[in-house]
Length: 268
Image 1 (cartoon, rainbow, N blue to C red):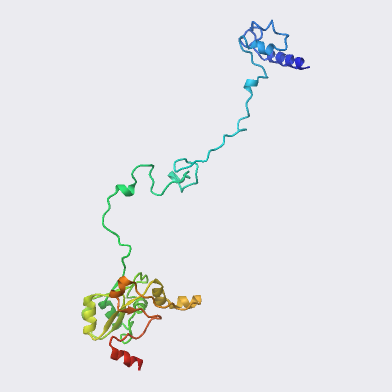
Image 2 (tube, rainbow, N blue to C red; image 1 turned 30 degrees about the vertical axis):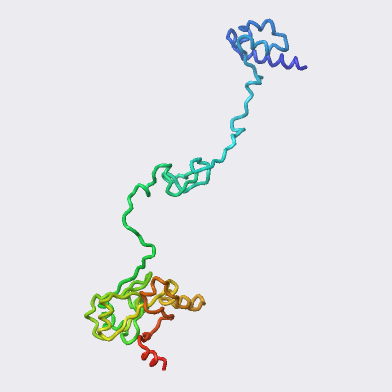
């Protein structure tokens, strides 16, 4: 039975071969000798090769049937890691890399020269001149009989809404101050302080932290959230000698007396 199947396959294969060619049984010098033998397929390989429908060395998997295992990369140059943002023209970039890494060459941040120094502990104050405060008092927007705080300056538009570290009182327009006023700010220049005190007023430097500024400028925010106003924070050691007292919450309306006699009069 096995021999009959082999002979049938060989006969079918001889039909598809061209006569008088190197792949034909007629051109094979061994074909007439091993034509009826069950092992004629192996004998044909001794001369010119004849291809049949059954060849073990031609067995292959279908295209796409097998897939080579992807070896997951390790390192910043493998290209097999997670996606790291977008590449050229919005394409997805493969692989992970360290921020600022430029393939091994000296990165731009090291090639460019460094100029100057940025102090991370520097403070930024909004300036306001005495001339602007005098114009607001003449316009009736500020009551000179009450204490002028940073909240008063913000509500009347003397300073911007974004107060980062406080307000600095400047001496611009100091000649317009003809009456005593009392102010509480973060910093004050020598010229502004002398002008206010010469008119019979006073300037006190107070300290507020970020939360204290929010409680001073927007106390309604705490009421809306159902929270209590925070306590005033103490200044850090480096700012102890630059301020006169701790800021008061909520926004005060009367100045703090500087002398003991005035303190006793207020307490009485």
